[in-house]
Image (cartoon, rainbow, N blue to C red):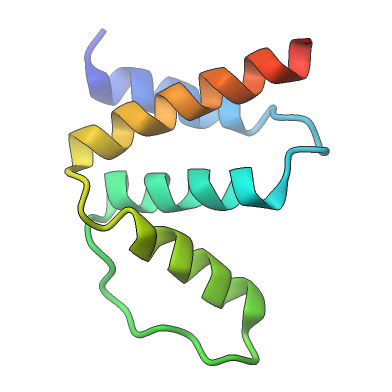
Length: 88
C-alpha cells in the first residue's frame, strides 16, 4: 500500500482510540492531520475566547514546516503508538 492508503487507514483507526486519550495527543494528531490534508495553516488564529479552536490552530501551526508526506508518516506513527499504549 502507498502512504496515502496507509494514512487513510490510520485516520479511520484513530477514531477507535480510547476516550482516555489525552488532549495533547488529540491535538498533535489534529495538527498532523490538517498538515497532511490541507497543508500550511491558511486561516487567522482564533480569538482568545475560542479556546478549543485556538488550541487546534496552534497544534496545526506547530507542524507547519512538515511536508504533506512527512505529516502523513508522523500521523501514522502517532496513531500506532497510541493504539499500542491503549492495549498495554
